[in-house]
View 1 (cartoon, rainbow, N blue to C red):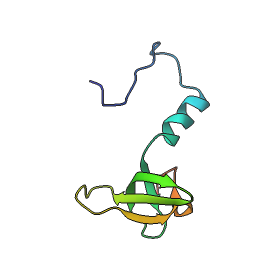
View 2: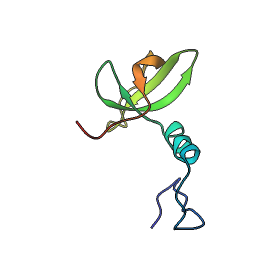
View 3: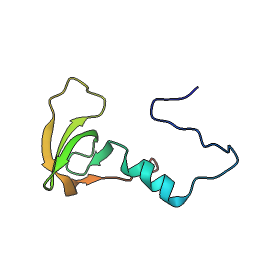
Length: 78
């Protein structure tokens, strides 16, 4: 079973390179808003501003936040 946007490596035994992993992180629209502490989906970003929507609230109105208040890497460990 494959998820949308998920590409299986051609050789299942080959490990992804650091660059490949970083590309997957950079292209992921999920961020953590440092102001609210909530996970958000990046809708649009330009000129140091980002338009975000709360992750599990698809009907919520997007809001504008400073792009430097969003993290790219999210730790699942506390």
